[in-house]
Image (cartoon, rainbow, N blue to C red):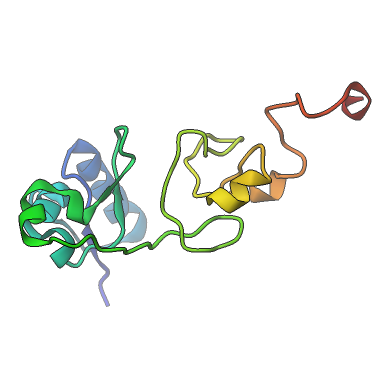
Length: 148
């Protein structure tokens, strides 16, 4: 059976490049996008659509709720709590990226809940979690003897 892929990216040039990459690497015959990208979809359907969770955005909001889009706020009065992410450490539902919550190794944004942040100084993404006890960028917590 031929693979079909539906992408919900922003609809820009990176989306086009990603489509070509998916076709080439997976052999998918059909790679399609939402017309106008995810932003237009969320403007039209908001929390009433099929998208759940937050849309990762490249500005200070970091994650935008479907219900926060302008046109949909007229339709949906109640905020919808669709937490689809999980904390990397305790796996409890969590979906808020923070500027300080990036992987120590590769700087990828990580989902680390407030409870887990309390006991951690540095964070590691799922690709680098195995390094959490041996890879540190902040050495200030170690004394001179421990560093020798």
